[in-house]
Amino acid sequence: MDKKELLSLIALQHIPGVGSITAKRLLENVGSAAKIFEHRTDLPSMIPGIQPSLIKALDCPSAHQRAEKEFEFIDKHHITCIGYHDEAYPSRLRECDDAPILLFYHGNVTLNPRRIVSIVGTRKCTDYGRDLCENFVRDLATLCPDTLIVSGVAYGIDVCAHRAAIKYGLPTVGVLAHGLDRIYPSVHRNVAVQMTQCGGLLTEYISHTEPERQNFLQRNRIVAGMADATIIVESAAKGGSLVTASIANSYGRDCFTFPARTTDTSSAGCHRLIRHHQAALITSAEDFIEAMMWDTSQKKHPEPIQQNLFPELNEEESHIIQVLGKHSEGTTINTLVMETNLAVHRLSAILFELELRDIVRPLAGSIYKLKR
Image 1: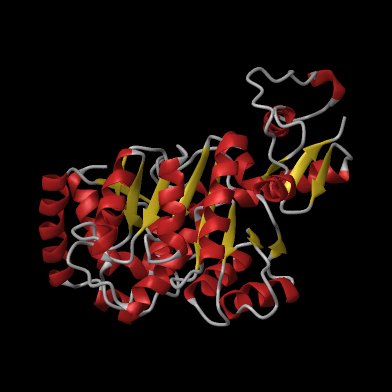
Image 2: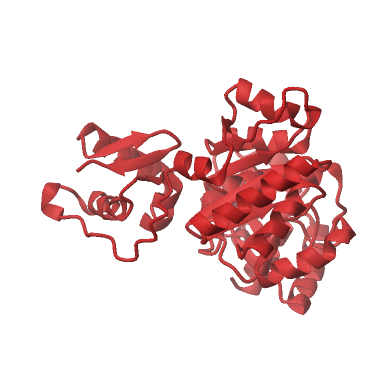
């Protein structure tokens, strides 16, 4: 991404009244952030129905001035900027309507690995919750050592998940509710530094952004959106982790939680999620892996699919069949999106057609399996 486009993306993301959904609509219709500002007065002819108030809002010199200052910070601290259309952008998050158009990243692992799990929970976790979290991550590291752990670097379960990932050798990424010029809470600075060596720190916010309450709620959509599944480890009747679970459900992502004693108020929210079928009950990493139908055999050379078993396939269908053939137990639609490089709406349509032709079988959890 060149400097002009980056400056325009930063400015666009900070135009008052222009949220992620509107910004993406502009990008999809115009093609680039730079062109949006260059052709601001021509937008009504390019995008039917665009409001005059939006045209006026885009005339915002202060947003461009702030973008220039942020570019200096980015350049000085070697921060990676990932635009919505960049290959490095989290592909799972890209499929969410309200995904940010620009992310700031300081880390050394890909944001598009084969498996991603978000682990969230109460800030006031008990010893039971800490043990659950650590044991889960430990066993997941043994069974699926390529899994990326995502959380929010907050007190309680969040930082427990990050520490466990570091301890047991899993990459871990923290999603921040502020810019990369600080760590909040500051007591987690040492953990955050370790994460940049075996994972990273990710945010949509520019430097000098205060860690305000609404930012944490906004941050939760990234935590939920970039993962295959969200796991809630302890939550009271109210809390941010329940918001993350709700967002994950709205994205059609899998959600899991652990049970506790019925009298434990620290898990009242988890029990409610189970009761209302908003999260599946698990007791171990093995339960989770079985529910996700993840292959733990670590096969390096899958048996190729014989093309003549499925005649009259077009190029896209053949590609999907070949990818499904690598996953004998089935795989998620998110994995198929990454491995086929097809948009989710196009992929869903083709999978439905293959299902009607009795070639592909859909399973629970947005998983698809090849019929043989």
